[in-house]
Image 1 (cartoon, rainbow, N blue to C red):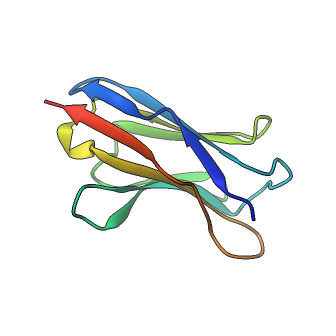
Image 2: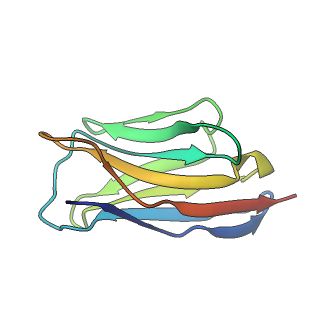
Length: 116
């Protein structure tokens, strides 16, 4: 089964930046309807951060203006550039994709920790 593979997490100080990347484990998995990112803070439920659906980007209010999601079709990779990071952005970030047919694909998650 196709999984999504994330990279780019880490530890950063408040105000800093990180860029997450996500690609499918199977490079033949292309043209999903939606690709995006959820995050799960400690002790909280998983919530959507940003996604691209039919080539249009959407953001949660919590990250709007600070995060940018983009897609490189040639590399079959989706990126999440995170600027002006805040301690509240700490959590595990999960990449996902909704294919044309079949169930949602998830990644294993990458930890982002923002220190104050």
